[in-house]
Length: 154
Image (tube, rainbow, N blue to C red; front, side):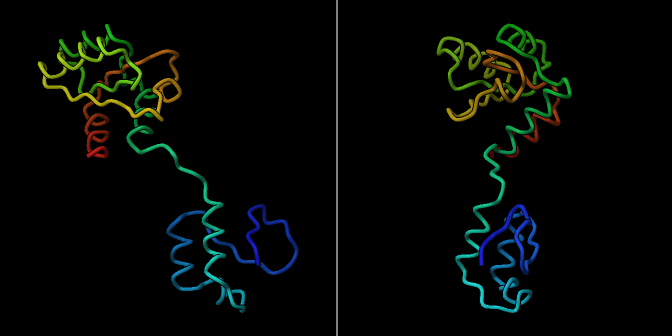
């Protein structure tokens, strides 16, 4: 017995959705054994889990992409600074490789104006998320996007 993700092999088979909770439930209740009327070892369920799509981006990072497409972001140091001073920015998100003096400047402005600042970890870059080349910092203008991102980080 082995997984057939393309569903092209001959013989008996059983469909199992590609969600971790489906595979966990099937494993706990040994559903494949019931439906296929044969013994199924636990390792089969582990092999099935390896075929799950990898979701390597945290939820708060996906929300940044949605905010960008919705036009709720301000891009670049100058625009973010001006937006914070005018009270238009709810959250600042910066790339981990933003230069130290720029990071310090944003931290001072964010603390003075009571705006939370988030630094992305080294594995995640802003550029592919928001579709802007060499953008190292963004300001989130929408309070709903900002609160959801903050909520998911904490």
